[in-house]
Length: 375
Image (cartoon, rainbow, N blue to C red; front, side, top):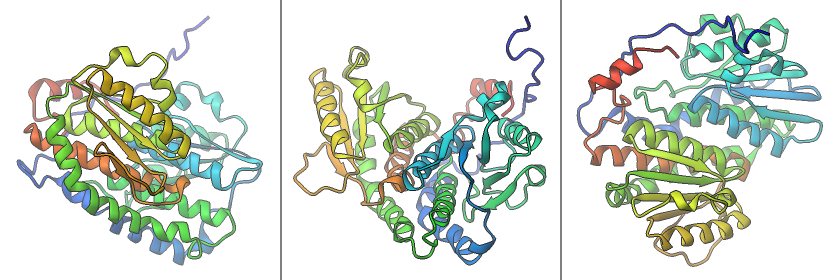
């Protein structure tokens, strides 16, 4: 019997061309973080004006959302929103493009596919789109690329605006892609995009996060500089926030970060935590908040520094180790609540003397390693 994956073609190795244009603060990532509220507004304007030309809502059946890296985290957050707002007979599932490439049978029974790629050139995502195209499954590609010739023959392209990244540590491309996704969801819910108050609130909430979290995350980064690893907890709507926040900390600051669910942390994770492990949690519901407080209190007993991000919108006294996230509709919260982790990654990188734009590719061994594979 042939091995699974036998004969599959791999992407060719690539010589990377990272954005080496900045050598000190402000790096390109800084400007991209600050631009996110406007990127959302610029993305939504043409979508609202062309609402009648948007793709039709999916029929009953399964919708797959896919991508890789930050784009997959956008797919994960959008799938959670899709199920929360639409629900019923229409189910959305986020599946990494690699899994679709390895096992094309996963596309069986799918009525609609939505793919995410900032550049519209991600090799695995294009292979996933080819699989959808071959099965005649209607597909939408949400991308920051103004011209996407390879993708346009495979999918309907829904472009974002102001979200083409100047840093390789992506930020605005995710939040703008989520805004486009939420606009589709609002239309498919039959409420009208312009009239969907939760969507109108989104760029305001992102602006609040951008303005309100730079200073506290800069201060937190100073205190976390001696950390050797971190754990980021998130469940339900907080899971894509935790996963994307962890990726930013890895990419920009070179910090080894694990992620897990809030409850999962209490079931065996604690022995790996010590005084040089930062433990953070994002809570998007009352139950998550109560359990996260217990988890972080336990972490502090083994001398781990902690930080809790409260996205519940509840009022009440909070300690110095808890921060309130901007109030936003829970299914749409990822676009705003990821911002503090972007700031933390940025300022931790700057404090370590690292360029957050280039993923350590200004260091010879890392450049050589990255040159050995393609994406």
